Amino acid sequence: CQTLGNFSLSITLPLYFITVLQKGLKENFADAEVSVVDCPDLTKEPFHFPAKGICGKPRIADVGGVPYLIPVAQTEKVYDLNTVAKEIELPGAFILGAGAASSKILGVNAELIAIVQSKSEKKPAVNGSYVAQINPADKGCLLEKYSSKYNDCEFGLLANLYASEGQPGKVIEVKANGRTGELNFVTCLRQTLEKHYGEKPVGMGGTFIIQKGKAKIHIMPTEFSACPLNTDEDVNNWLKFFEMKAPLICQTVFVSRDPGFDLRVEHTHCFSHHGEGGHYHQDTSPDSVQYLGYLLPAEQLFRIDRPQETHLVGRD
Ligand SMILES: [Zn+2]
Image (tube, helix red, strand yellow):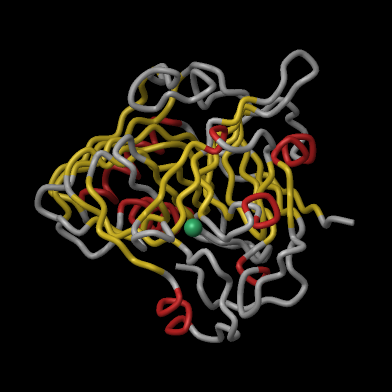
């Protein structure tokens, strides 16, 4: 039986909202511009998503959690994005996000870059997700389209998801160039919201492109750790870190603060068209980096299968 928590997130007038975000970004980037635009057609380059937009009943789902991965992986924890869509009361939702692939399906542990039009009464699911794993041949990144090998919509252990009806419509365009501060793009946006809205949680999700520069990205090893991972240091020694090149197309979900649901407050996974992808930490080329994002605040957040025993290790 899954636990399901649901609460409404604070959303405010777009005009005020974009002023807040732009001001926050300018404290961490040389240039920043936030505006309301029509969502670009996400079925086109460079996205090639199965839905045109990220609009219509925007929702966030935090499924499972890091405590199912560490200290010891609970590989029986598997989920289905079609089921998640029903649980968040949005069957047929277009879902973007960051999670772990189902090791039961793949036979190995891997990063899931979730991009799924879930199934509805009218249409079957379209899985546009990518999987990033460690290539056993050269220990490099192996990025593959999920649908090239599998035809399900499963994932394992944990995922942070942004769901909507996948409609075109108005979205918040965020441009930031030249990083001058220490924060990554997502943490900067999240902390800006936290500073501004305090105890009221505000959550956002969508997609952004690292257009220029390089980024620090991790991929989990194909094998779960044989020894328990008890500290952040253990986790960082287990993960494989890479410097990957732009353009990287990143799926992100973040919540300004955890109102007590044991949330992962930010999580971003990226793919590319040059064989690289994984979990985003930070750009490594602050001077030349260019970010371009399309995001929306979510109206509701759903907490699904919250771990009963928890900790704060490995949430970076
Ligand atoms: Zn991740």
